[in-house]
Each structure stands twice: as C-alpha cells, then as structure tokens.
Image: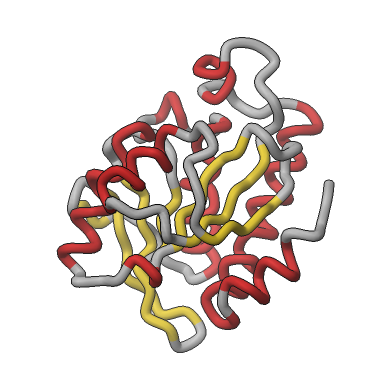
Length: 185
C-alpha cells in the first residue's frame, strides 16, 4: 500500500502539502492508470507494478485526519503495517530532497501524527520530500504553491520519487535508503 498525503480539492492541487498526491499521480501516470476509485475515505487504484500488486492511495480526509483513511484501508484489505509506505512533505529538508525513513516520530507533521495515533504504531516506512523551511506562518506556507527554483526542484523530486518508490517496492527500505538518502540538492 503506497499512500501519498495531501489535501483534496482544486485549491490545494499544486501546494507544498500535496507532494504526496503528486507522487501518487506520477506513479499512476507511469503505469497508465488513474487513482479515482472512492473507497475508505480515499481515492485508490490497485495496480500491478513489476509483478507486485499494490494499492495507490490518496486520502480524502484532509491532511490532519489522514489516519482515519489509512486505518480503514488496512482493515479493509487486511494488510500489514510493514507493507505500508507513506509519502509526505517535510519542512526540514531542502526543496526537492528525498529521504526514506523507517519508523520514528511525526517530526511535527500532523498527517503523520494522525496516522501514528490511528495505527497505534509508528513502525511504518516513509518517503519524505523536502519543501524547505517556512518563511512565514507554517500553516500558510504549506498551503501555497511552489514557485521559481523550488517548483523546478519539486518537479524533479516527484519524477525521481517514482524510481525511489519502485526501489522500495522491489528491493526494500534499506537499499532504497542507501540509494536515495545520500543525494542532496
């Protein structure tokens, strides 16, 4: 199960908080699929990718309530938490930098905090995509679109994330971390 975090609605489409949705859409495009089945408070699509059956997910609960949808999907598919990858934005990484993480805290990210609360565990894999430090109020910052050099860095990061997620899927978290975490923008 590959979950990209974001907010539903046209007004949020290209905002910093929606890089998770952007990656899910890029993976779907790579596979000539669309993520539009409404299920468990999310848009989903089951796809086959290199012989692996996976579920692409875009929760529709808004960022801060993402855990509701994730928990429903895990229960519906009787899936395990160790088969889960959550893709989300990260204020502590420079724009466009990728970083895989295995378990750990929420790091101030309310979507991750809500997933941890609903799963009663923080033991799931994440792919964090840097959006840079907030230059003003964090809530306003994450809900604004990318501009200039940051926009280009994010477009490249989203494209690179498709390969990163494929590495996670086919090789596991450790090789994916070794390959993608050392790269800096």
